[in-house]
Image 1 (cartoon, rainbow, N blue to C red):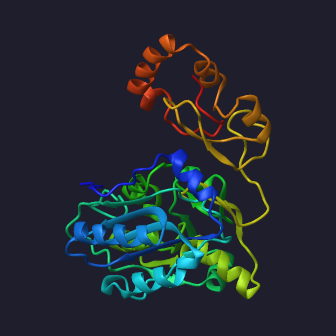
Image 2: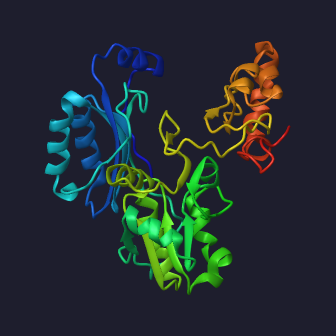
Image 3: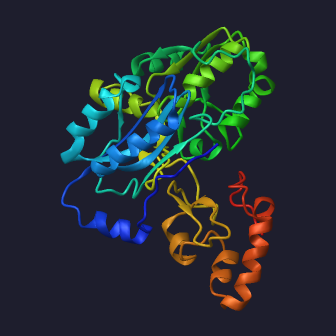
Length: 348
């Protein structure tokens, strides 16, 4: 179920042009809360109208189980925004995860609020599962201590392409591209580790809330997760002067596609498979649009395309490109969509 009756009318080009003229900064934030919402559609409409007035941009999912928001807020409207969100009974007390740097609107360019069946797609249909029975929280200081403990199994609850550009020391990374796939493979991949101390992490904490409960449901006895995810871990490390045990960049789901947590670059360009790089791009070939990592040299040589194939395709005359585009749209999941292999992009 998806309902987007309230929509934005401006094209991306027009919206970005308006943002470029702004004389104020925006604060990029994320927040979530698992809470019972009786009528998500009514709340969605009320949120859309209010946030439009504050000139907020972002992507928000609402479901009967709660809210999941990633957005930016104009700094001049911050106090009004905060008062409004905290004034909604269901969201009172919800904490914000604030991005490392204030931006000029580059994280989101429009406001989208959708009604969903769940705020995070998990594929769980077990009536005995209790999502409220979550694991315990750990602070950044406790996380660092746990990582030093050989009895701790650190589990990355993000997708493979997120973990590729940044992860904690010694983390177990599942080779999957969706949260749904992770949960479905927990017992097959980690079933023999049920007596270990499990510490999991994700970007801002929302996936770990549900994942920690799922691990407990599956018989794991000692389950914990990082309070506030990587975003809050980074904040606590800076504020408390702690050692940073996260290597690389934290992938984020907005126009920035990443926040640097450490100076290390741990990934490799998917195009040349040689140069260290951790900047993500979407291939300019709309029939491909694969998410890939590129170094500056390959980005310039391929003009923003993921491969010679896509770069050549873009230069074809329209009369030849149209039938190929239809062919690609039909077969892209089979031939184009695997994001990457350990050796880089899948070749065509």
